[in-house]
Image 1 (cartoon, rainbow, N blue to C red):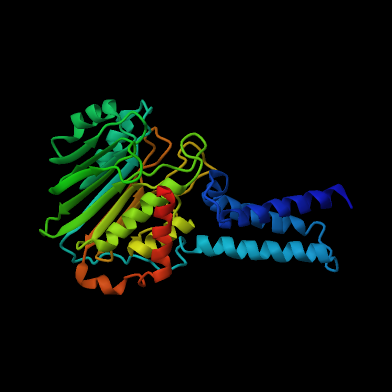
Image 2 (cartoon, rainbow, N blue to C red; image 1 turned 90 degrees about the vertical axis):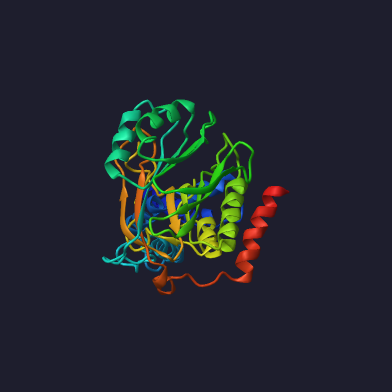
Amino acid sequence: MSKLKLFLRGFAFIAIVLTIFPYIPLNTWVVRVFDFPHLQLTVLTVSAFLTYFFRFEIKNRIDQAFIISLLICITVQFQKIYTYTPLAAYEIHEGSKNAKTSISIYAANVLQKNKKKNLLIKDAVDKEADVLLFTETDQTWIIKLNEHFSNTYKFKVEVPLDNTYGMLLYSKFELLNPKVKYIVEDTIPSIHTKLVLPSKDTIQVFAIHPAPPTPQHNPSSVDRDAEMMKIALMTRESEYPVIVMGDFNDVAWSETTKLFQRVSGLLDSRKGRGLYNTYNAKSYLMRWPLDHVFSSAAFRVKDIQVGDDIGSDHFPFFTEFTYEPRLSSEQELPKASAQEIKNAKSQIKEENS
């Protein structure tokens, strides 16, 4: 067998293994990290398929097995990507032109050590959002941001921390009973508050930043997944429409995020519109959507954008919704099954064990 044939089979084998990896039922970061570069893995798999034809022998059973396996992998990969292309239907419909109430949200992971604070401030000012969420904010960040936003945003929740999990929430709209909760780890906060829209309608807002599965912080995804499932169950119990925002440290197409959506009933504004990659801002090749704004069916999309370079490893994520609860039934997700709810509760129990 030629060296080229060996190389092509090795290339194909790697593409197949990396496609299968995210489906392995293990929470270790070594497995979960392969949820992220899905688009890149798709390109790798297609490349492996195309290059294999340099030495493809139609009567060779091993070659046949590799080609069929690669085709299956490409199909699986594309199925995930398709949902985030303009070829797919919107999960959240376009907002009505005559809608009277709207809310815009600007969410940004600032990168705690980022020295280019004025880049973030300029981009946030330009977007003129009703709600600002900043994550990785320590006391230095909060002092700087308050200088620019405290007069415009009358309502705020500050959680300065030095561990890269600080949070700062600004709102032009009234916040009711805002609370800072540590629902999984006592060092990682989330903000829970009700918000009063200009129409006087009340909605529930959750701002989260769960820890990623990394060898430096937590070698498994258990804590991240548990926080997402707890928020999903809180959403199910909410008497108000819900918006969940933040740096999820998880991609939109992962099995965890899909379960989060199914259990919470929340919708993804990206679907049918694009990937809107927010991480890694410092790499042109390795980018994926980590920052999210999920919403109840009472909301519709008016605008969605990725912000400018702010000196962080994340790009900001901007979303503007119209509030149209009378049309909710047109875009509600199917009810979560009993098994899906059981799976969500199992992930929470795993964190507690």
